Amino acid sequence: MAISKFNYNSFNVTPVASKALAFNSDADGFTTASGSSMILIKTLTASSSATLSFVDGSSDVVLDDTYPVYKFEFINIHPSADDTGLTVGFRDGSTAYDATKTTTFFRATHGEDGSSGAVAYVTGADIAQGTGFQRLDNDMGADADQCMSGEMFLYNPSSTTFVSILCQEQVQVDQQTVLMTFLWLVTVM
Image (cartoon, rainbow, N blue to C red; front, top):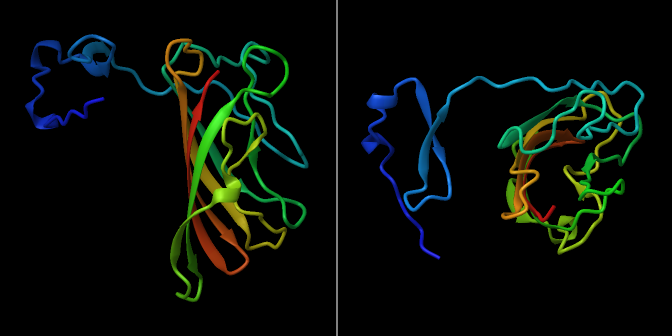
């Protein structure tokens, strides 16, 4: 496998100024694509909810190869009980959330008082070719000053040729620590 570096200032897209640059499987890896803004598919609001489902084909949800990238936003997640976490599961065509996934989980912490800054790989939050739900955060508490916000990107969710990739980042205030969590998830769907 080779790694290629590109100087993004050297791309000449003047002949196709109304188009966007996109990646494909050709030898050069590039093509032009119609540029567009993001399209809101669905808003789910949790209010006294333990589970929210975003399932392709139900309730006007599109989660297939219609778009190459899907963005999920988590805004002010605040649990009603201590030691509660946000998780995500995927389906692989059946009705069960049992898609096999391999994940890597990193966490950066920094105390609100300026102490105990650290970056750590969190082995216990990884899934190695497993089917369980993936934890997206540290255990949160129900105190008024504990919450989480973040975003998650899902790439190629219905590809049968390539793996689907999920990247998630979030900021969480938990007790007296500010956390930034990064999750790179490779899911075979």
